[in-house]
Image (tube, rainbow over all chains, first blue to last red):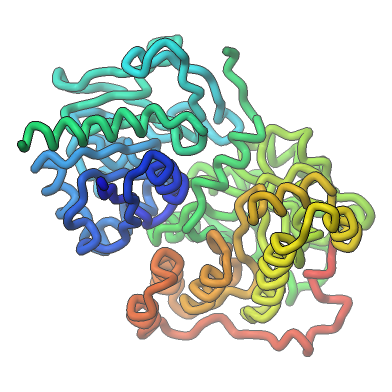
Length: 197
Length: 295
């Protein structure tokens, strides 16, 4: 059984854990560096990026996560998770992990009254749309050549992207019953293990 | 599909993102920055913290819009603000300012002793206080997208928050042990909407996120409420009425994250300086209790 860590410092980590369990993976809440050892994948959930970022540094999780990602550990970041994985974040430079070649703007769509839900098309998941919930969501402002856009809003704003072993979503797949993004993430882990063999 | 704003999903969803975090009362932009720097997941903007409201007496109202705007502009984390129970115009004003969450709060003087705000009419989400499961479900029925215990605000005394959290959690456990044909009578006993009673019966939890509030003054207080079932903490006077707010704020954030780890709670509890001065609940005249405001 695959062991997937879910960063559990703050935010909606229980929702990710439930989806992983539903998909037959073992989900491990991670609050301390030693809990990162022996994982097959890691999810950084939605929450408040400043809070999670500060606690990640305070409890010395950041350098370990950076090393594991550099070694190829598959990682999924949703909303705050996307912010924390980005190379550049306006106003939060001290706390992100800087492991993905994207520049991100926080609260890019506005305040809570501008939070929204909508259907997006994500070809990699098949024809049926994904119902996406955006809460004080960030967006991707710029990206490097190795970053692939997996989904966009109708106006072209990129909201799901992948660079190698890193997938990020600006919205919250953990708040819906659609498990396809998590399944896609688990398939990356499967792929990595095949390569190892 | 159309893009939809202000839906129940996005209202309850923001509360999901606040879970495991600490929401701190602040009265100035500088305090808001200290709270953000300490790792608060949101701030509550108000003119006076509850212990000062209690000491000053008189009628406590919504804060000055300029003051709330200054706090909104000072931080990047969500900003909450309080309106009086039943005062839907204060709520409209706060919504127009771009506040991220409204607290229809017993800490302010109620504007309506019979009716709470019909919160479904708003795009901005509301959090409301409760003392027991019935009160929580009545507020959710009116549209509260997040619940907190009332506790007894401004006292630095955790006893009421513990009472309220235990009451909510134990009533839910009791519901779970019942059979379907007993639910209507239980709904009557709780004075709660039947559909919501049935939902708690099926899921074993409230349909919205449930925080603790009212009297949290130390890291151990914060962890206690988390272990009793809170999904996060509001800290009012407990931070900026302590002798070293920066250190206390950071300590309470860490104790809320690591609420099951006594060693970490011990570590963050060292050398904090003085917690806020506390008040014995029995020493407060009944007419000055805040938790009994609203129903």
